[in-house]
Image 1 (cartoon, one colour):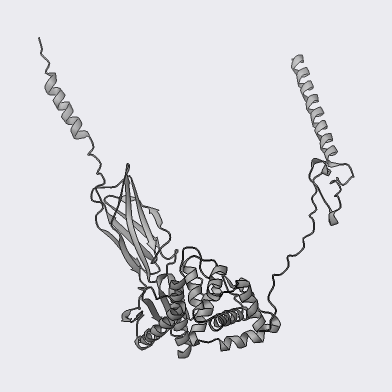
Image 2: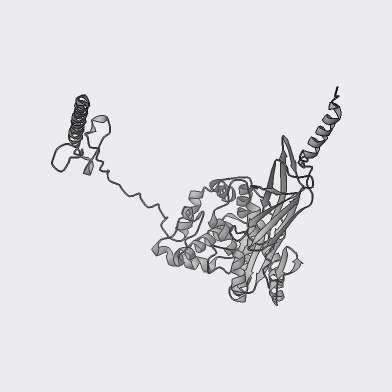
Length: 433
């Protein structure tokens, strides 16, 4: 009798199955090194190492700015034991000197793990821009080429501009201001990005405490005033910042222009010359100024003379009272009253009266006549149908004068008769076969 040795055979089969079984997938075990690099105007590349393998879900979280109010979240595919995300800076413009913080987030089952926070500052590292940097009081100046002397001049002016604005607004600058000095027009506008006005000679981005200056923007005297103007915007931003809304543009720009010379003599002359043509309402200068020459010039002039009037009529503490109210989340009406002690409506009317001008009024809404609506039936269904001057509209008729509803009914009847005749004929033919 032949004996079967099943046990050794079973062991062999199990061993073969074990060898044939695919290796267990690598499991996420945490984050390795994280890195980020930028090429201005091209891309920002974020990378992370995943030594233990991929999690169920991987995301990159990016915060832009000094105090961001939102986080950009992007899902990222893993390749092996690393992942890469590329921000396309050629399509999604980002202002130079923007601080960026980022972190990776992995989800595996119910477990959520975040990496350490990485950071970089988005540098304008275009070829030829060999930046040099110096700290001068409240300013960090940046220049390249032979523009150091002018950059240091801007650094000197920053101290005085900041001190003056701080005193009037009653609030200290929150941190140093970065000032970048550009030599050529193309380099300057390349930093400002799409949408910059062609007449721009200097620009401020208060949210990242950055000023861009173009040496070809004007004369030395213009550049000095422009620097003071732009730095004042940063102080104003710090002094009025809140979680609800920004102050009206006329107050922001008016204070910056007033700060250039500490008066509004030139602007007052402009306002007086425009009285006969009509002045602009301050309510129309809350979010934007007109682009045209007259509208733009008059907007800045009215804004500056209003700030001058607030300072000299309501005292040196008026602007600081307004700024403090904004920091506490006040509305425009509440903030202006907090600083001046009078309602905003009175502040505006007193301003126009001081220039002998009539107060601008909203343009009356145009009268729109009733619409002509043809329904094909009378108004018996409860919908009032009117014609010109409010008269009842005639029912819509066919060209021959027969009501449209009767025509439709007649056509339907003919179709039914023809169909019935066709069916009767088919039945007769079927019975004859």
